[in-house]
Amino acid sequence: MNLTQRDLAVIWHPYTQMQTALPPIPIVRGDGALLFDENGKQYIDAVSSWWVNIHGHANKYIAERVAKQLLQLEHVIFAGFTHEPAIELAERLLAILPTDQSKVFYSDNGSTAVEVAIKMCLQYWNNQGAQRTKILAFKNAYHGDTFGAMAVSGRSAFTKAFDSLLFEVEFIDLPTADNIKQLKSRISYLRSELACFIFEPLVQGSAGMIMYEAEHLNELMSHCKAEGIFTIADEVFTGFGRTGKRFAMDHVTEQPDIMCFSKGLTGGTMAFGITTCTDKIYNAFLSTDKLKTLFHGHSYTANPVACAASLASMDLFVAPETEANIARIEMSHQAFAAKIRNHPKIKTIRQTGTILAIEWQTGEDTNYFSNLRDKLYQYFLDAGIILRPLGNVIYILPPYCITDDQLAYIYGKIELALQEVGK
Ligand SMILES: *Cc1c(COP(=O)(O)O)cnc(C)c1O
Image 1 (tube, rainbow, N blue to C red):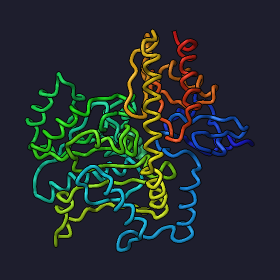
Image 2: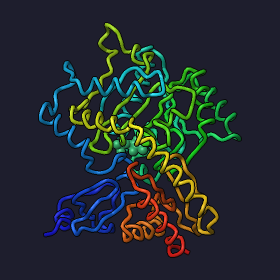
Image 3: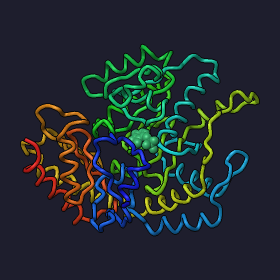
Image 4: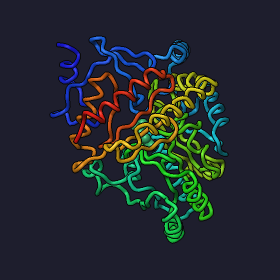
């Protein structure tokens, strides 16, 4: 049996209709922005392997740091014990966060980072004896796939089977110049019930790379602050350079109470999550009363190997070359967007930092499950490019080490697709 046959015999893939999906492509190695399949065919990873990779695949520097850590200490229980990689990572992350974040809580992935954030806020109020149990979120938000994270995400086809079990959340529209006044009065009206406001800053990734203005987010955040509602910046996707600055929160002046990180945190090497918070939140859990403890933890909390990968990724992330690469991708996207903006098959084209999203003009059937999506996906795969359209939105968000030639190749194939795919 080949790898594909062996896979299909024993594996159930994420977000995959196993009956109708094409068989998975076995990837045997990676190098920079490239992935290679078992036949030696190369693919440019234009989506950074579900948005996690920032420094390229099989990065030597990260690999060596991880290998060294594995030989020294692979894991230790994190209740009652600690280790230098966890301490150093917390120190270094807090030092580059654009806020008064002061404590780091480790977990395993983006969804768990969100769960921790929500629990911190809800228990904060509980510890004060206050009845603030409602959460405010944006329509079409995506914060993860565990139940709490799903509950604060928009209701959709993906959540339908579970909707009756998801706790009630107050959903508001994304802010615009026209509706911001209304949103603020809605928030004020609900203030006594609201524990916190969770949002994806600047870009709603899973919703289809929907973008909104930093200025309006800033206004909402400062309004929440004035009303005593905690703000949670879910930077799981936007963190570590995606939006052109180190963090999406670097685009606003207001500071969140809590931040969530995952995806790019380890450079895309392994699963890991971080929730950070201010002293105000942390202090509300300090007590001689054991019931005020934050009762949350995972077996692999603060795994030293994941910390080591994050530290190595951090070294690369703060190096001037990475900043230059991010700026280079941003400018390159801009030039390409300007070139194709008026193409009749393009409905809109939008960009934030290294993220370029092109919304395809379609007649009917424009959702996630559309035929156009499948056609585009296959078209780019055949061309040796991994792009995973969200409905009729194709987006490029490459590892920062992608070369100009590789970018030009992707752009060229998109122009060809505009001629050849769809009506
Ligand atoms: C991907 C994502 C998550 C969930 O992260 P996982 O590691 O997949 O659980 C949460 N929030 C945002 C904004 C994301 O993009």
